[in-house]
Length: 296
Ligand code: PAF
Image 1 (cartoon, rainbow, N blue to C red):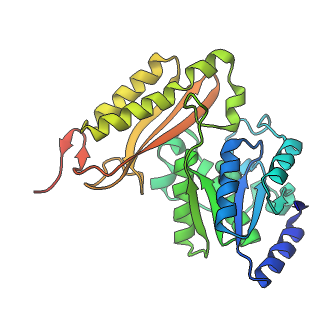
Image 2: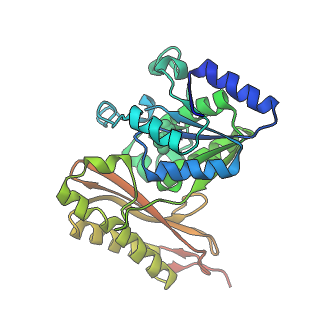
């Protein structure tokens, strides 16, 4: 049975579940749910006895020229999907429940530069501060045992893991692999902005990531792999912002030997910004700027 709660209702329901010994999973979302979100819900249902999904388009993670006003809002469809998915509680807060004195006067989290000012953060200043601030508020309100996030927003997932570790919050953070369309395009609420022509171009991102993962596994150096990725995406008609090989755990540009890698990409199709990433298993050697830096 699905309930729609305000902040007081969330506190009451979660308090009662905790007293009954039930574990709680939180799936934070901005709504406009698709199969990627429902995979998070499925994972949450495996991990905990009670599942809470939040639907809140968080203003503090959007830049001045970004799509806050036009971000797709589909609450009726979202509630139907969550009901069918067996969610226990939906938290759809009013702005005052998240930011009682308004977003501009809210206390917030400052994400350290190593995580905030790289990759997506370079192009979206303040974005990760906004994400970390709202996620912290949601975690404090719901107090879940586990919170579930998609690996599609890989940098976001790492920021949240670091936030939780740094503040010693008693919650597990679970990442769920990217859910893709049959042609490889990562599912995203923003895919609906794509024209038919852009939709045909967009899977080039995933193809370039797969090629990059193969090249790294074959021993090609990260700089060369990145350069090729940028070229491939541009040749497909997309406008790349970055195509980078990073350490999977810390996003460092020159990962140490034996560290798992992640290839991450952001590009525009028209005015729509798309992101994606792929895992690469640990490489036996540390490769920095084309030089094998492994110590003998
Ligand atoms: O990934 C999202 O949908 C959002 O960034 C999140 C985690 C719900 C915070 O607003």
